[in-house]
Length: 135
Length: 392
Image (tube, rainbow over all chains, first blue to last red; front, top):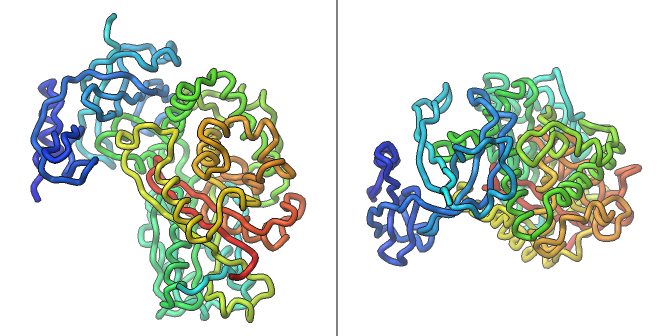
């Protein structure tokens, strides 16, 4: 078994502004971020796919008591991507103190930013960001 | 499978402790063994729970040291379990599976945790290690944050104004602190009111301080045995009627966080094995790490329809002498406290004592069937144990 797309390849994609996932050749499900097997049907017959990078915000929170190494307040959110998968990331370009329920259902564009590694996690890692799409 | 009984149970005071993890565990373990009318030398194995000993005390591989502290024989293996907050329930389930399978006749299970020693920033960091590291904890998600996102989803999905939902969630905290006020082992033994909950500092919008359980220190332990031998040892064994355990992946795969799929799978296993359903439960100790978590759990069990448990506490349906089913008579994680590696064994302790009629002012009258529910990580592990005071 070999990964079609490794975490490192996914990270390189983010660095270039590309959202790399997989399409399952057995059931057509889109898998994002990449994994060893299809989450819907278990098949390992997968092909690399670039996602559109657009989705809909489904929920969020404002973190005000943060883990060691993070500076609050900041927003963590989940979005449903247009290709089907959900993703977790940081909602940026929105004032945490202005964040409320009206965010749910808003259209968002994906991006990424660097999360600094710490003693425990080691390397810096790119994590997803969401920005509200201008109407 | 042979039927498995629970003999002696014990927990330490929960709260802030100066004792080491091993000292707390030995206190609970030796008390549980003594209450079983047994000696440490009678234990054939130790199923030991601890999550963060490496950060709390610089101690990995704590199981053999816990084994030595209890004075168990070298021939009795000690194994450490780590399933985040569900650790001790999973340890007890595996103990029960091996007793049921006939590998052992008498074993001890439990756990210990000394979380307060880390302080809030490091404790928040280490708890977040139970979220997926590359994609989720790197984005700064915390445990209150996970349940905060579930709260926003719940309000949106069931079209309940957030302000109204939060008032009902505060009702869960008020109820569990009321129960905790009758539990001398609870971390918090003071009653609170809804205004106090709604006036607390914001931790992760919309969860405020008193929507959250505390970081706690404590230990708990239970002795399990072949049911056929139990009656010779103590006069009131409690029996395992059914068990379940299920797993789920990172939040981005779970999607709708109002539906805890692992819990739905786990409770279905437990109901099936027990031949019981939600209407049969007299008392429940469930995983109220946050107020919203109690609401989600009651819906997963089928005690309420999805979208209908949010006002159960404010309507008085889940309190002692409530009209539906008594939920978290110990005070729950909210008030009793949450030493994560010990929590499941303390929940079992509460249910066993309830089924024996030993719970004093917080006794659920005539309780015959009780449910233990423990959640680990960000909804990734669920373990359920249904207990009864009547043998098959």
